[in-house]
Length: 433
Image (cartoon, rainbow, N blue to C red; front, side, top):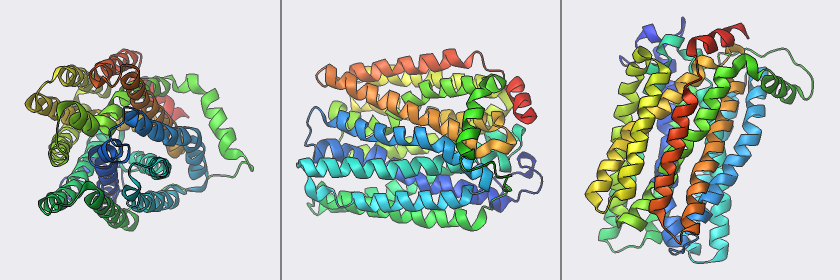
């Protein structure tokens, strides 16, 4: 609890509430680490699709569909949550959906090599990742209720750091089982389902800590009619000029998070298909990446509050550009390890910085709604980045090096879109809303 100094928190907020909030990052990170990054993504391409050239594209299409669903539903869900003070209730429902979806994925390896297996896996990924994304947006909306503007970076960093610890724990347990299974001569079709069940169990158990410790501090707002959530959402877009710094942040987020999404969803595929990593080596690589990301998220939160949000985020995006250049030119596992380590440090810090900036610029009475807009941007990024990568790979006959090199352009665009943001002006507009 000493990690949460009271100076960073809002009056009346207790440390255990922040711990409960951070535990949700701990809970859901296992899903992204095992399912989206390290284990199931690579198995989908190499096992279910049996290494076909269209495998990466099919994987990115499934993710893109889920992100499209979130894009067009989360802002209205957030507006409804604000009106009814229902963030916590919706967070519980989203958690249940993702956990059950992860369990359902455990049944897909038995259908490897069949069109039905591919279709089923894609459908379940759409469902589980949609609910995961809902949960990520809703938990982010609690952040401004817990931290003041000066401590937003620290608290966001704590959350991301806890998240990577959760991802490491889940992946570590899965890796231990995979190594045992491989020593017994068991195939991936056997150990992949077990890793999915482990992930679901840890997600559900750790999230219960959040539900027990994190209160719903918001109060229901006056009802504004049957379609009030949609009307409020249209009003928010209509008032975009009053929140232009937040809108610039959303544009920036679409670009740089598109690049981050490529790293999250395709790192294992690139490592195995291009560099030649074995599944156990890939899991170890992602484990170390999570260690670096946890250090980056935790330490960078303090740097961000001191150096400024915009400048800090720009530094992390430069690091991402370096990652793309090194990964695209890597010809050995050692060189790719260097790229992955830098990516880990940049991933934790850039994701923490973006969430903290959204928290500073979001109006206090519309937190879930504005984090719904932020979720719209991150999920659009999840389509733009990975789908673009998949299309480039497919169009170049499977050349993923060109695709990863093109990803550097997304981070360059993110840096350019940071320039118009004035955090002080944006905070004033948020408080006046």
